[in-house]
Length: 136
Image (tube, rainbow, N blue to C red):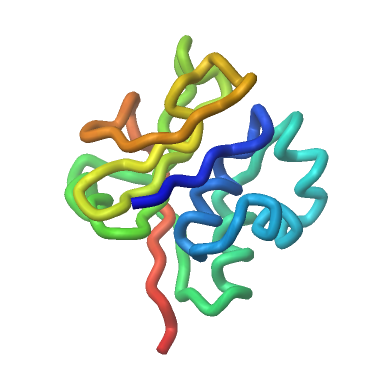
């Protein structure tokens, strides 16, 4: 299984979107409005990721994760946003790939170079989920 590494300090949303789309980080970054600036400084909101996925042919939506909905995040291509914390001051996106979570910045806080990898468990509390379904 391949992973996609984020190329900016706030690019985890781009990398997770690229993983779902099956294209490169750079190609996906161009799909986001003001992507060059945002992947460096501010990051992306769930609605921006949904917009990109929708334009690329996916039925896509996001939801706040309540305890009753927690089991629904374990579906392939689900992107989750974990809560801001000491380790993740801006929060962090990961995407479900098979039985694992693809983490686009596995070796955080080292960004030179950042490395991606797979985790068995989420490294924090998921608060939003972006669900996707390919439109056929």
